[in-house]
Length: 325
Image (cartoon, rainbow, N blue to C red):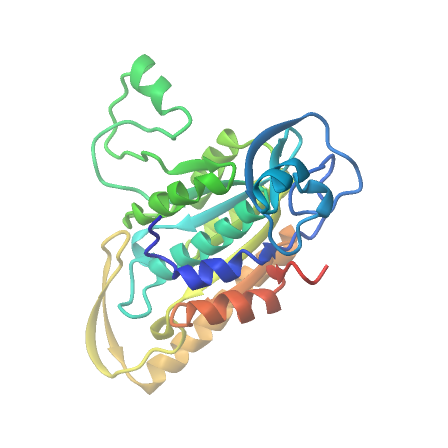
């Protein structure tokens, strides 16, 4: 089982963490979240090793008597909510070397997705980017139908931008899905959110990891999410150079998503103007978040991923150790 996004020690530690949900899931019986009501019909999925924090009533004692090891049964509740992780794989996220924004986002999604599956949650992941190839518009769920019944040719393919994961057995497939992500062109967050909700219409919890540069797209995405009653969290990822740029001289800046070019003279006055506009950018996003009831967490792509998982995200109210109930 190979995962080059996260170290095995980090994954082992993440098995003891769960995503924090702001509201209890309705009509839910199994999984990591507390609920006021019991779920309906449930479907057995698999056995998994007992970990600290699992309910004793879920232990399969017959298996323990036979093997001498504790296992719990995993069930798929027909009324169980789904966690949706949307990661921006546009060209603007393909930035930085040691502090690459895109890789940092994929690492976070790999970790949070693992936590969701460790806790028995359903998981959907969508890559909000475009690959410049000729082909068909598909998702993993409708790919077979599209190939056999439709003969549509378009300039851009969005193949396998959405995938579903139902249990810990899907962890290798999750990591492979993220490892295969390509960065390019525009994010189209709203478009990808709609596509993911078509695949997983029962989604209730949305986490977005992006630099959020397209404010119009962000606003529309948040409007759609609010209209669907989603509990939404924005992981706002910027590189150190974007938060506090340096250097002086004449430069030609090229927009990585639309190719627009701008000549600029970088000097102390220009940096003061930049920082002022950056603060206005933050304020506009926060205004949108207040309007649509969304949480925003500012993340620096140079941050150590262990610090991100075990200090920053718990402090931000996104992750918690399962020993603290």
